[in-house]
Length: 117
Image (cartoon, rainbow, N blue to C red; front, top):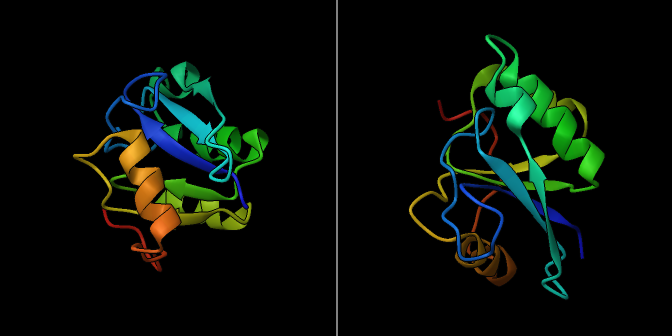
């Protein structure tokens, strides 16, 4: 199964989904089959005055994830994610990383066709 990246407020599966994409604290990259995961810090993007979403898209691409689970994605970041072949699922804030992955696994999500911020 495809690895997914989830914007996260912390490094654990029980941490909350960070509703922001470009300025998220980090990303929990999960193999949905095994639920093995690793945390990728997004500190560099958080400190950028501009282009945080584009840098974060590159970070996700480098992690090997092909799907992003998050809350909100702006237009430039959405295009950057699309350019590197990463599908986006939005509006998954107010839940834990693990809950977001379980929702993805159940198929109770829709791939975004446009940014939502």
